[in-house]
Length: 318
Image (cartoon, rainbow, N blue to C red):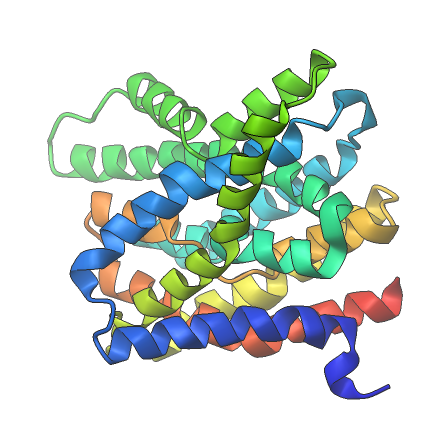
């Protein structure tokens, strides 16, 4: 079989071509940095909710296998905790640890999984996406607030109230354009109703536009993000995100007896490059912002090779 006809190559090539097109458009200033926020709003507030709701509106809860969720988040939380312990307990180490476990499951992951594994694989991925931000970002917020409290006490300052901060983080993660349409779509599916054609068709068209626009936007963002002098630490974060997390998820899934397509989707999801939410935490807690942006660019760029490797390995295993 010709290498270009291999399912992994055939599904990943369009993804990275679109990212490259976005990068070129950004470098040539066809899409300027000022327009990135508006494009992000288009993707996150209109296109992705349409795709997520429509996909989950035909899924019945009793058909979902929840073991992959346990396997995925057990591995991710173990790696998050281990990374903080290894680097030392402070704000910067927590943000760096989050960079090593938080995958870009939406902007890149959804399109890759949909192309490579179809609707069945996408449903498995979306069960992870529904809890991805809620679990990882809430745990990270608690950890960061504990680190801030420790720093404040060391300086004789008053620490913020942990419970109030935790509730705010959980609420913001739940009422969000990603988990909300997944949850409402699942609730709609349990009614037994089907979407009328006049509603389903516009949702389908909006969802179809998500993939190419999101990937071009990733490229544009990369073009406007300098690596600076952070390549070495960024490589460590990239190695954790692109290689170590999928290995740990694979081991965790094996322990839980998960095989076949769910195993493949979990491992491939873990191999996705670093997600943009990590930068938001770095910005909010005023630590490691340049390192975080450099890591995001490096993780995304190197995923051309690491993601291909992981998908090829999983195709051989399954």
